[in-house]
Image (tube, rainbow, N blue to C red; front, side):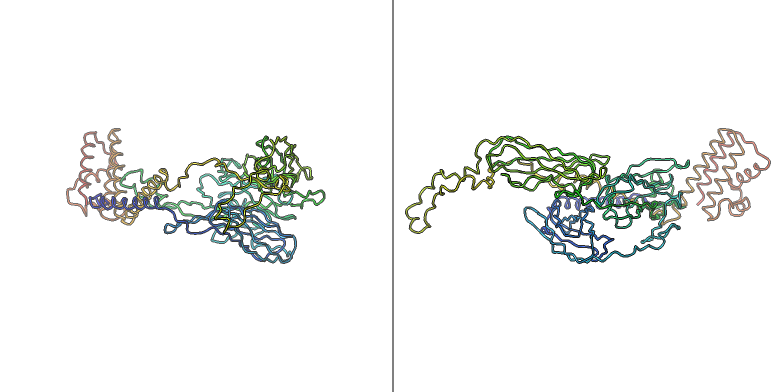
Length: 640
């Protein structure tokens, strides 16, 4: 029988290939990275010209740092809405570079020419900034209606994707959109549930997350993966993917809302599969065959949900506090300070926690009073999603008392808009008692009672500058109260950071992946070779059929069924001679056997008995059937 057989030379070649792959993986894992790019920042706006009723996308790319968030400037007439971020890493010829792109939707309040000042970001203590961007905003024009976007049938989307409107083809699937509100304010998060239904039995792969058509809304995904369930719709089972997301409007007005979802359907094709890789039924499994490229045809579709509308209102101007930062929802404020016993000039940690439901991307740090004997620093923030639309945002701010007369940490305030009551709400914390233990290090530095520096050597008096004078009595601790002391403590040390590419689990994962890749590549070549040689497939198909016929003969022999036994004998003879003579097996008759086989061949006798038995019936005992079975098996093995 023809086919692939392991030979010593083939084994050596495969072993050498695996060794080369292992060496390459080892070099890749242990090669020290070379940071190719210095930290820099750039910004771009697309498009540079847009109308008032449209939005542009601002992309700020920070290279060389993954945590330096850009500081957007305030531009009169322009509003910026966060639209997500993406990361990119490259490793080329041993040089590693990384960048983070921050995306913002830009909306204009009125037409005109605007200049976006340089955008700044702090990377490793160094302040970087972009070039300024000039854009033009045109007056609003009539809304364009895309071709085929009406209530008619499906249309073709770009890229050869079939666009399917919800309800048009329930054999494939449909979508449902559930909005919790029909009216909201600009920037308010509206909970929205998106459900995609695919009929069970259809294999589908989701190409992307749900996407909102148009530029009037921003969709915020709460979870990376959808919830997978099963539902019955009109008695038909469907596999359901559910996204519990939120949507916010970027401008006032009543706008249509439509959501689409890209997917790839796997349509099964009628193809001939071999009986199994290496003769094993495991490797002939349909799942493995489809994995290695056979059995299915991919068809890209885009599922479109039913049209909805949402009315967006502007926030009221009346009663808007000056410190309102754009937070919309319902929130609570919790404030604490550590330590509460310190010295003048010692830094304190002010912790402010905002908890609730709303647009946390617009939640800014609570306002600490300016001046009043305090020196403050820019707070840091950390957000945590609590589920079901709730969240918590923590702020930590360093504050330094500069006056010994302070007795408490003043209250801080946080303002938000409550869409339920349609009013602005300002939360204020209570003042926290503080005990200062006399003058701190900052005051001690400015005390005139400090001893004067020792006099310089006589030879330095002749050539050096005049000796320093002591501070006059007019300089008091109050004059230097605004200075923070130098910290001399070492602080908390962190453990040595081991790069990921040097960790044992990562090296093992790379090795296993390369081994699996080599195995899959070898099996694919093996399968392609089998498919390229029809004789191998035909021979394996014949072996499977003969095995089935022999089993039928054994069962008929055990049951004493002569007719069934003879029919299985005839089928086995037809299948074997059909392959040998290259003709249809069931077209082989007794006349063909008498013409092409030698006279007196046992196969002719058995075939003739089978044909007579189908008309008049022939009785054979078990010994005769056993003898005939062995004879047929022996004669068929001789056929070439």
